Amino acid sequence: MDFWQNKRVVVTGGAGFLGSFVVEKLRQRRCREIFIPRSKDYDLVDMEAVKRLYRETRPDIVVHLAARVGGIGANLANPGKFFYDNLLMGVQLLEVGRLVGIEKFVAIGTICAYPKFTPVPFKEDDLWNGYPEETNAPYGLAKKMLLVQAQSYRQQYGFNSIVLLPVNLYGPRDNFDLETSHVIPAIIRKCCEARERGADSIVVWGDGSPTREFLYVEDAAEGILLAAERYNGPDPVNLGSGMEISIKDLIDLIAWLTGYKGEVRWDTARPNGQPRRSLDTGRADKLFGFRVQVPFEEGLRRTVAWYERTKHDAQQPMMQGSVPRVTS
Image (cartoon, rainbow, N blue to C red):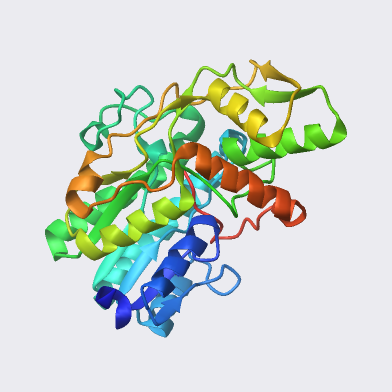
């Protein structure tokens, strides 16, 4: 806890899904000075706004969570914007951080940076062995440039920046807007609404065969702060749970947890996305002692319960400014 007590910390995206848990954990660690830039005040795609952010906050550490993100549909609809906004935010925050001499930059990448056909479990050394899955490649490549920039800045300038690669996140406070959400919140909402209407079916994209790994948001926040405290190396580090589940089995589990008893209809005209996703998490354990604490089914129970309590607010579309939520 002493690590954070006298640090000034900027958390971009700190008002979003993952960011809100990171900020809570910083406060639990007695960090006294936390600044959360809001998109209406600091457009992180604009270099002058980034310079003003550093000038006005004078941080020791920057935790860069802000991203333009969404599920498969949002990525397909916005490939140019997802590439440009994510690239510019990362490039400019790192560059100005270097120029003003901050102590450390913690960059959050994405599992979407991995090649489409990566041997499972994904190892960090396989990151460059192919092109990402096409539906989210622009987003994945933009975030991947954080790693290139961080490593080159470390080599040339001795700038201390680390890059973490979280797997798909889930949990309370997630985005449940069906136009932009990821698979878990989307299916929870569909199942709950179908149950309440007495509908006999829901429609899900793809054929259910792809696999995914999921990390509970509080575990992800803890991993990020452990890395900030203990890791100062050039290599990217996966943050994951080490589990793998098919989309079909995931939907069956969510249906059971939500009490939905109807049919699942597969829209096979829609893309599946990457065939398999599961991470090798050994490097995070070895380098900064990160291991998950919340079992998957328990995390899903908490997420469903939160949604049921707050569904009116949870269903509202999240603001798509320069600092929306972060997930992978």
